[in-house]
Length: 295
Image (cartoon, rainbow, N blue to C red):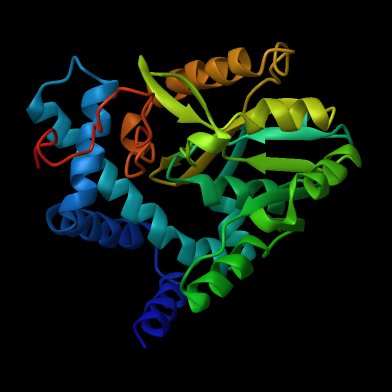
């Protein structure tokens, strides 16, 4: 019942003016910041590690802004997935080196975990005539799962690979000239990761960007999505000329370093709610334990 009500509300929000949607998102964000204490601790711990020059007051301000943008982006899925097509197009501004995504060359898009990641996907699939693919993790709630899948398949020619589909299927798609929208800047466990620096702290990072690009004979194109009062700016950056290389660890470290430069322009819009430093190298303590993390 609760899920049905939420999804009904999201469809209704598609008709609201954007300033009202964002105002509601702001309210929801403040409530989440106040109520979801465990995630607030995660966000604050991440920010302390990545921005040691900030004092506690600045950490608090940045944390609240992050929760607000997180909630606003979540509610924006209402109009992204249910709004009129012309309204969606008018709110998604595709900018930068868009020519990098033209033609038929196999391409891996490096799409960092900014709150606008679904807006970036929607802009590309709606506005560019390529076949886009991405990797999808099933949600526990089956109603929500179906809604998210339907939303991400709304525009264009797309395919969502489940993690159980395996690497070979994804590589076959790449080699045929598809575009893979990849979000590798997360911690999926030490078994499939390399420990490389992220803001000076070792972080378990999946090396899938370099690996898919190399095995798929694809170029790497970063796409950075920024929330704005008008909607979203989806900036396509120039293809990286030095990745992939023959050094998987160096490539993954370089990815994190370049990601930092993107985050520095809008730290309040990065997905800090994820436990980015959950897994530690041998001998290092858990950074998220309650005694080490103040509220």
